[in-house]
Image 1 (cartoon, one colour):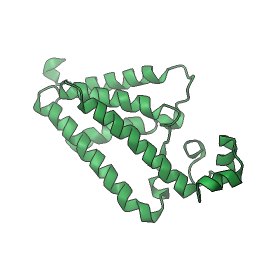
Image 2: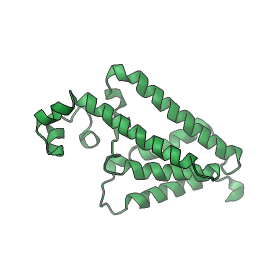
Image 3: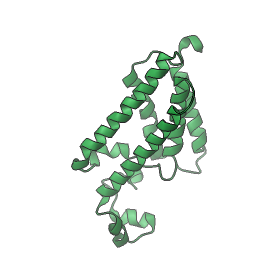
Image 4: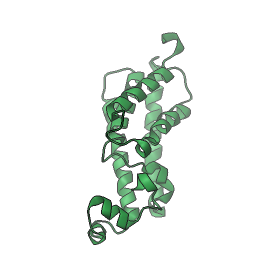
Length: 177
């Protein structure tokens, strides 16, 4: 519901109906939609963490790891449970949770910069401004859960492969093209 209509426009009644629950049953599990949003953030964080861990575990060049991170992440965020386009709803997070959310986002940013820096250092990636490269990578994927629907013309795997190829074309040094 948050992906479709936005956090502020989604009601507990709509969320309950989508889940096939009564509002009372939904309130048994969640005190309000802010709590649901925080669970969505946690799920999104887990998808990103899992994609990064799988990419880092590869015995591969920096560029290959970046491309695989993108591929793993796209597959994760286009899955039914990963389709929480909640990064766009960050301002809707409960104020008490904001510091922790921003801290986790900065940690992911640092990890991705290190991943890109490793590619630059091993020569598999062109010299790039790390912060811009990471913003480009993550920005390219942020809107996917807003428009992607299972059963679309392109499968999640096909989109993941295409995005991975975009990363390769974008980051491959000119001398290796």
